[in-house]
Image 1 (cartoon, rainbow, N blue to C red):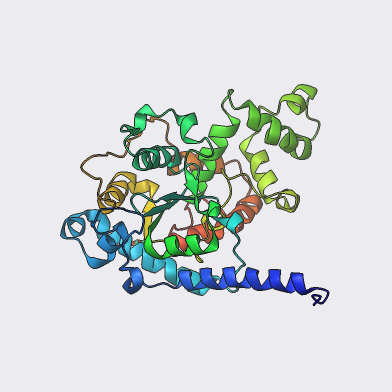
Image 2 (image 1 turned 30 degrees about the vertical axis):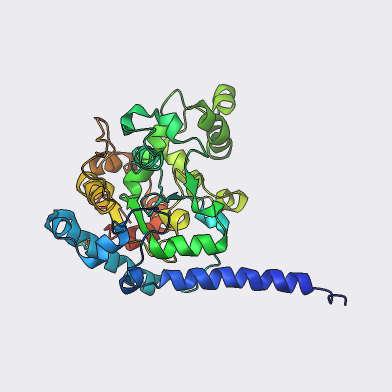
Length: 339
Ligand SMILES: *[C@@H]1O[C@H](CO)[C@@H](O)[C@H](O)[C@H]1NC(C)=O
């Protein structure tokens, strides 16, 4: 018997919607369903991080972070209900930022410029089965090598769903404009980032600097913050390709309205929030989250200085671009904006 024309396409569509449906169910999973053990944990009967979170843990409740974690989870859920209309189709491609730790039952969605190098280091220790013990002994570039950690997109649909259901899913976020200024400073004002200068800098200067000097067009190493902002709000930019992950919105990287994150950590309270995750994972005693020795962290005052040079027109456009990240994670509109 011959398949009618288009049969294959129909099948493909069905599979597509199956995947979406399954993820949809995941997104509305309530804590009550969370009583599953992390499956791949041979010979251990310890409760999973997810169980620990929702079944209550006296030690955890003593941590200052605990109450705010619950509040943020609820706020995120509410914000998603009021601000997202249509559920977008999720594909395995969308799960590339979700790092999986099968040993402890953790899923971490990494957001660049929000301590993600240190989280990757910690996850390398957690999944290395003893090969690594000290996160800071892992060089930063090693932590970013694709393939050193497994992402959820590498698994089958059934394996994806099983993990989404039973693992503790966490994310760390940051005030959107502080993250953006941090990305700008890191990628465009440091001499060593030549790859970014070539790839993005030359294009930004070509498009957004009238009468650019040949050397600037060639090197792309002196992009100003206002030029970077013009590039971001230019409709051509996103039509041509997705934003680079360093300035892509958390909403687009981690899909927080489709994937139910159990812990929303914040950069502003990095240490206690990281400690809470490590406690849930049952490794608080053996592993410490690396504290940054950075003295030039981008903060609100620094962001304000950079935004002084942005006109109200562009400030408004930029705010609209990042609006969802502000709302979903309870960041208020910065006072320095003149919109
Ligand atoms: C949201 O932000 C406001 C203002 O900063 C704060 O008072 C409130 O506690 C936050 N809510 C949650 C759930 O984090």
